[in-house]
Length: 186
Length: 298
Figure 1 (cartoon, chains in turn green, purple):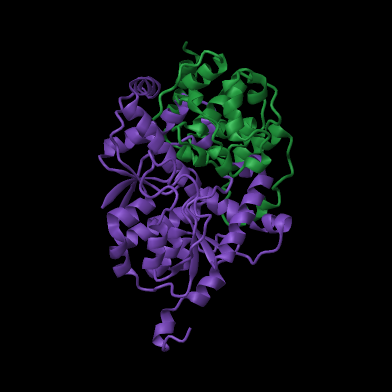
Figure 2: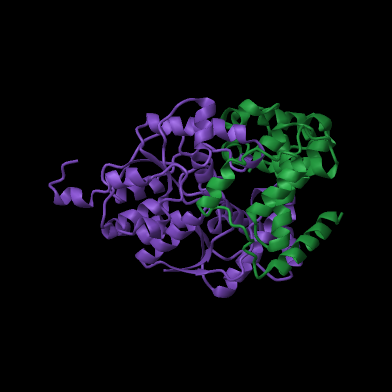
């Protein structure tokens, strides 16, 4: 793994490195990540441009970008980076920072999906799709998309009507609580 | 061969057919699976995109249970597999991560449990040659695009049972079943994964690209080993065709369903029929149990 260079120009870069545990500042803009990114056509900034915005300390631009929420975590960039930068982990760190700082997001779908998914896990210890999708749809106001899929999924037995609760659901709730405490530690 | 099985949330719901076919296929091969009792969700992408500590703690809860069973872990979902391996590696290699995870879970864990994907178990533990000897109903004439997607092979430092850019394990298995794997360039391209929920038009575009390339390469069907790959290519196939242009309908099957067929199991035992794009006529056409008997006229 490439060593991080000392980077004094951007506090943002230092924070992202600390949170992601990967040497973002080692990026020399070869654009290999962008070339292989499957979601590139839909992104407002390509992954290599996201890295550059971090270098330059352009916090509002990068934390408010569509790109960090469109990343599908497919890890192609991470696998191919010649500087061994975990680009996908950088995207995670930026998403977490955008939520922490209550940045205005281009759309709330990613945030609300994560919230609805994890809410379901917290309640049942496992994901209950029907409940998770209901919360997600109410939170985004996107009530009707994919409704045509529901009868088909029900008919194929792919959308159970009741949660498959884990016997360790109580333990999971404690884990969520303690993880939140840990995240608040300095 | 005995494993602590981590089914994960999808295998009891949107991918119940992957669960059923994995269990049936392993049973037929004498691979014993014991469910991890009271397993919990691995957290998947929402956890690693929301909380670094939760993304490790949730998988570790399961690994601690598996450690108590004294068995290596096997899982079938590619995302569960990647999350379990990632968490394990972090606990093993980063002392602070381990201490934090032990504080959160309230139990010790040092990252020593082995974690395998069902493909890894079939190809590297059981062995392709062994599989070949167990095939009773070769899938002759069936042309399969093996679709690995993202998380079975990436990142290689973490998952590491096949080549990240040119994986072959599924192709080897398909060959052992008597079917024909097609060469195609998108075997490890992403399907859009959970963007399916949040930005489904992206998934439509990617799905169409994958389906049309599989067809151009001559495939009759696509084999997958991930619940999200299956859902994005199958459930959303009609939308993709509507939005991006006509294509012949392409069944998308779990590799364990194809293997089960070759081992002589029934459609019902394998959950064949759970797909949105039906595979039954394709598989009935190509199932040549009688072809050899009738002189092999294809």
